[in-house]
Image (tube, rainbow, N blue to C red; front, top):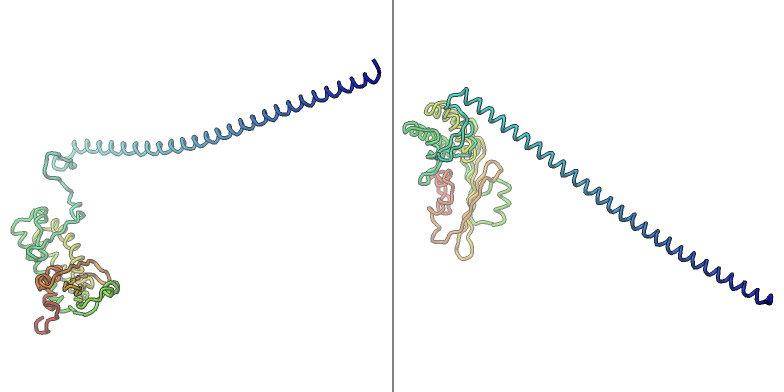
Amino acid sequence: MKPRNLHLISLTVLIAISCTTWIMQRNRGNVLEAEHQQAQNQIESLIEKLRATNELIARTDAEIQARSVAITERLNELARLQAERDELTRQETVLPTTELPYRWNEESETVRLGKRFITSLGLSPWTEDSGKPFQLDETMVTLLDMNPEERTHVQESVDRLIAHQRAVEFSVLEVLDQPISEKLDEVIGKTDPELLITFSLPAFPEEGQTLKDQFRANIESALGADRAEMFNTMSERRFDYELGGIGAQHRWITYTEKWEPGGFVSLGVFEGLDDRIMGTSSTGVSPKEYNRERINAQIPARWRELVNAHYHRGQLLEEGEN
């Protein structure tokens, strides 16, 4: 074989070997890259699973803590109930039947209530009988087991208190043409009524305290110390709201009339203590309904005697008619 041909063959073999080596290396690189990507994906998947596992552990811990608190509270409640049961069992062995703790009876129409709870029930001793305020409520008469004589004595004591208070109120009453309360002035100013009258009763604490002391003594004389204490507590709560604490606070009522288009009249009543607005009411009446009886119905019963002495169908009465 000629040297030239031998050279060409050698060169061809070298080229083939180089190509084969390059191809093998490239394939190996692709394999390694694929393996690297697969490993990377597996790592990311493991990280995501680890994160989810941590969140599950956190939620589980929170649930365990919540259940632990609930179980503790339940155990405490069971312990309390067991203690009450043990106490009831003990009392049944040492107390007379009449002093046993109260138990609900589904078949009974009555309940037994501790005396200490009566004054916190929000009951009012008073009702209105045919528009007359401060009449003994039947519920209160029954609750305190008043006999006819006691009831009469209590009602007379109430009537004397109101009569004496009225006498003092007439002596201090002021009739004004403007509101007492700045807050009310803002409210009324928006409506601009044709008529505005305020009946103002300044506080009279000394006279009021004397009246309250006499009243308490009269009720105790009628009912005895135990029932009188309950009755006076509930009465004075109502007196604070309805009568300014028997002279303890500045009490007022403002009456307004606004003539609307079409002839209707808007009647407004605003009642308060000191600078506070305690209650409001308003209604519209036709010209046919606009009369003294309709106006009286709008005025709270506790104010009617005072108001009627000064007011009649939108006009102040003359001084001699008070």
